[in-house]
Amino acid sequence: MPELILLDHSGREPLYMQLYRHFRAEIEQHKLKEGDKFPSIRGLADSLSLSKITVEKAYQQLLCEGYIKSGNRARYSVNKFVESSWPAPASQAAKPAESPAEPPVRYDLASGEMDMGGFDFALWRRYINKAFTDQNRLMRYGDPEGETELRRQIVNYIRSRGVDCHQEQVIVGPGVQSLLNMLAGILKPYHGGIAFEEPGFKNGRRIWEDRGFRIIPVRLRREGIDTGELAASGARLVYVTPSHQFPTGYIMPIGERIRLLNWAGQTGATIIEDDYDSEFRYFGRPIPALKGLDTEGTVIYMGSFSKVIPPSIRISYMVLPDRLLEIYRKRASVYNQATSTVEQLALARYMADGHLERQIRRLRKLYNEKHALFRDNIRTVFGKRVEINETESGLHMVLTVKSALTPRELYDRALAKGCRIALLQDYYLGEAPVAPSQIILYFSKIPAAEMPTAIRLLKEAWFETS
Image (cartoon, rainbow, N blue to C red; front, side):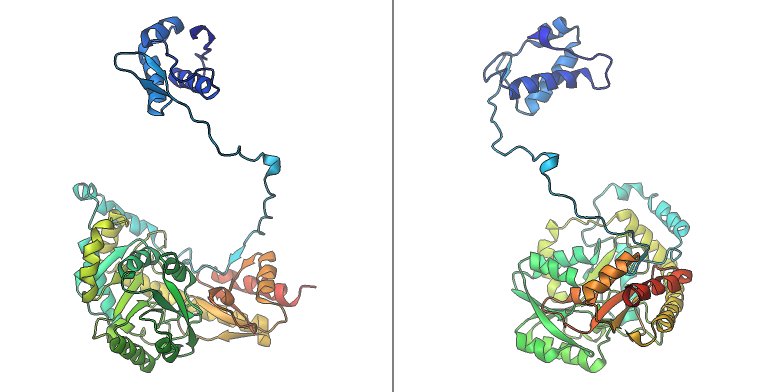
């Protein structure tokens, strides 16, 4: 056996790996059969002019992977080898042809990401560096509910939304979708279904659907979710975005909020309030959160920093009513904190020093200007060919396009011009209205100087294409 082993002493691959691969191939090709003895380590090392350590490492790798076995004070022998019953991978020629690549996107109007100049990374780096000074703390997994300093700052922060809570109610997580997944696990024993606004947050719906919940779409009116239809649905759990409904932008008035809370109080239902971009109301004060009106502990409040600091810094939070805290704590041991401790500590200090408030004021001014510029350019370029669903907040607009083109045709033609858009119909669980064609356009990441070009490209795509 040794004289048949050829090793490349000048190659890049370690000798022990070459030896391991040789024996593995011999076993897989049945040249070595179950029970066959391997040469002794010393004997093989001498015959190949190798060190014993090199041979031993090759044998150990084969042993770990189950190709050989070790007898008591005996040489290694070949283990039983089971052939794979799976078919061989398809050849390259047999693989289906790849779908054609999308045209390059010049303007991503389907994304609510931040303006490129909207965040001071040099300042953030200083706070990250400060967080690294507490090395003893960084060696631990961290509090499953979130770092104490950050939860304390969140309590102070959401008071501006009318939310009065204590620190123990705040749970930090790496993004709202992660928190929703946790929440679905907590609530699953008590609810078989969950109602959603129709149209509504499709990624949120998927999480609950994946957890085995029945999704109950409830019609959306300009005043918000139809509370009469909600009551008739039999649902006892509902997900809403009352301060800036997504995707329509509607704002639920106070009367409807009280009606929704009364329904929850009378039926023992739970409301999940997603307050995803409440900071960006451009006229007057921000609308108080539904949670701020909640006196019965029926509302779970969800918030995120992803619109005011880069979304790559994955930090969101939820506020649980006291009645759900005990349920959460019984299951908390299965939820390790997945949010970076470094970033939590950095954000807590950043907030404590007043930088988050300044950041929000700066972004509100920037986005207010971009909102007005975007709206004015749409009116100038399109004239009466489109209608804007006017809102005074948020980072996107909904347009009704007066065209014979279907929504999908609008999407494809815009993409061919280098503009990615979103379709309102994609946010319906059931059948979307056939007409009119409504699209969603985000303006937050589009440079102000390039807005006229982006909008002109859309006009060319929809009204000037032969």
